[in-house]
Length: 299
Image (spheres, rainbow, N blue to C red):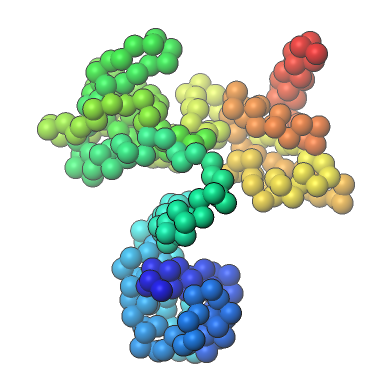
């Protein structure tokens, strides 16, 4: 059995069960599909521990007081935002299952992988080297292909697509969003290029739902009431990263958000059908009412 799969098993085990002694790890390991009749020996475990530290976005430390091993995330690299950690760890899981996934491909149904991923490496290299990128970009609105020189700011995945926020060299101080799937012939510029404005990713996407961004609107406090079993779905898969649960009964729960209302946000609310009601602000409540009234005319 590969070292990768065993290390992934150890990471998952310590994430689910918390701190464990080596004996406790082996007690669980005996019931795993990876078990081949032998326990993980101390020397082998230390090799796995070292491999995890240099390969994965996490590491294992031994607590001398408790005699247990604990899993930690590389906060110095990933900060307090766990999304990149989770994303990279999932990539290792996919790599670990490749052989069996191909063998049993007639038993697996997958959603489409995010588009544009083939251009991410070049864009990240440009950011790292403080350079711009050149590409041929197809515009849906204009239905034209235009050669662009762009200075990248940020990357974001949204609804199975990768996007880049960048500054066109022809329009300094203006940020625009580009879908990576519509870029062709992507190359780094030979010349050093830096963005005109120092904007953090938190500032740019503050109150943003998805990839939409508005310079004119400020985020609003929005409260919705979710009914019945739909509450558990919203808890498990938050509508937005700002989601807070403010009040709950056996029949309903009120969630609060800090969002700039936009098309994608209203679309997401409608996805929950009659199980969701906008409480405030009144402007968002009325906007939902108008959308539903227009839909009703179609029937």
